[in-house]
Amino acid sequence: MFYGLLKGKGWVWTITIILVVIGIAIQIISTISGAVFSASLVSSSLSNNVNTFLSGIIGGIIAIAINVVVVYYLYIIYTDQM
Figure 1 (spheres, rainbow, N blue to C red):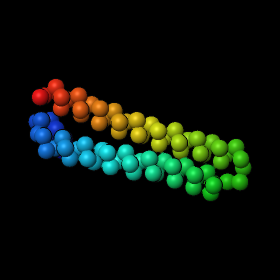
Figure 2: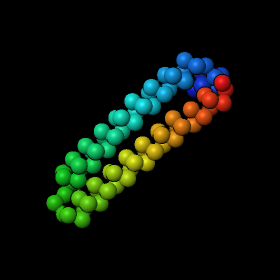
Figure 3: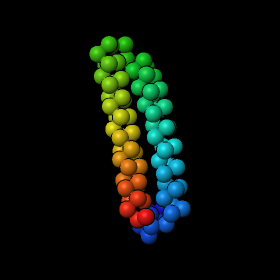
C-alpha cells in the first residue's frame, strides 16, 4: 500500500481509507471493552482499578486520534491531487 500511496494510485487510497475506518471501529470497541474488563480483573484496590481504567481509555483515545489524523491527511492529499 505504501508504494501505491507514494505513486498516487486511487485504488490504494480507497483501500487505505476502508482499512483505517475499520481500524477506528475496532479501536473504539477495544477501548471500551478492554478498559472495563482490565479494570475489573487487575486487582481489588480501587485506586489501581481507576488508574488501569484511565490508562486504557487514554491509550485508546490516542490510538483513535492517530487514525483520525491519517484519514484527514489522506483526504487533504486526495483533494489536492484533483
